[in-house]
Image 1: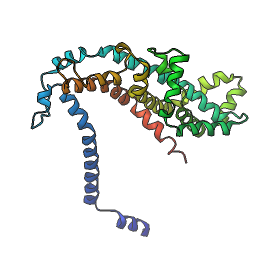
Image 2: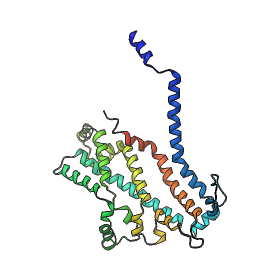
Image 3: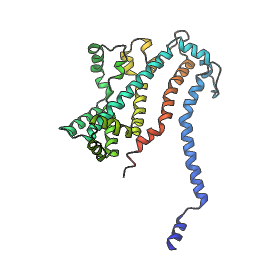
Image 4: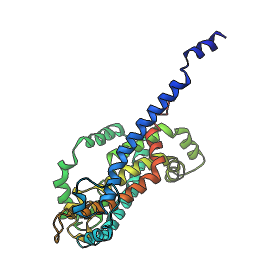
Length: 291
């Protein structure tokens, strides 16, 4: 009885709990509004002319210049071709990255071989080297040796087995997949190749989701690599193509055209994130849930 009375005495009154919830939810709503409003305003600005965009006071309602801005954008860049380039490169690069990184992470997590820990430490050390430090050797390799200028391979193959991706998958496999499960598969006569694809890979969905989104977004937003190796408008990815919208040959700087193109470029990756958000969060939190 004394324990129950102590718990009741320590419990906050209901009105205080309601106030706490209201304050907490208000903070969440404010943060959500501040995060979503710039994107909404970008969509709105894409429907206005440049004169209307710079008019004061600003407007927060859609305009009626969508068709004019779309025609202006298509007169500068082949947008749909550039969209295909970005989608193809990002999707293919992500698929290869998930395959190679999961296989590499599985090897580091579950196999014993000479120099494993030293090789893993060396791989992690490469993450400390800025990408820009190796851009000249990378460009020489792509252009002089492999002759991949204006080819998709230049953006898909390099980085398909990233150090971060292998590290990510190694940690996930080490934390979530018991070695006893693999031993049981070996006892049943399952070859090593099928152990990975039939036993391990189906259990990696949260890790695949998180790493897939990060890889896809990184490939979709890449600018310097496509700028160096793609030298024709029809081979540009969206970030490079959008840079051309900053200067309209006919009308100079056209903010409406730029905002419309940027909005159309953001929508696909926003859809991808919303579709895979649950797996992304699960992949990020799985390590924290291990006791």
